[in-house]
Image 1 (cartoon, rainbow, N blue to C red):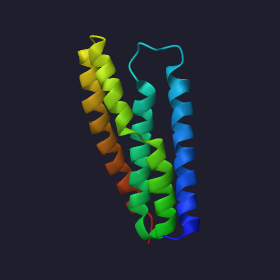
Image 2: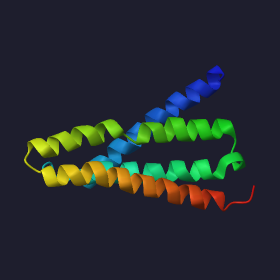
Image 3: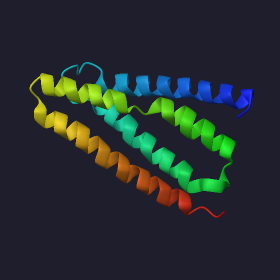
Length: 125
């Protein structure tokens, strides 16, 4: 990977993280003790988009896939925040929400990725 690609990947990662933050804040504004719906939405949509990019395969170039998939969507999605939010929910006595957050995020993200890959695979090569 050349220097230009590395810079593009880093910038895309920062943009993805910024978008994640904005979506999370908008969806959870004023709901500090509620279910972390913002991070759930981010991870499911990010998985769907990465699935779509992966399904497109050679339709988009490897460099574009790296910048968008690894950079943008890598910065956008976050497993670590799911982990922290799950522990926070459990510590607040919301073990039911903690289980839903952990396993619901995993299941929904996998299904979203599969749908994205299927849709991406529909485009002519």
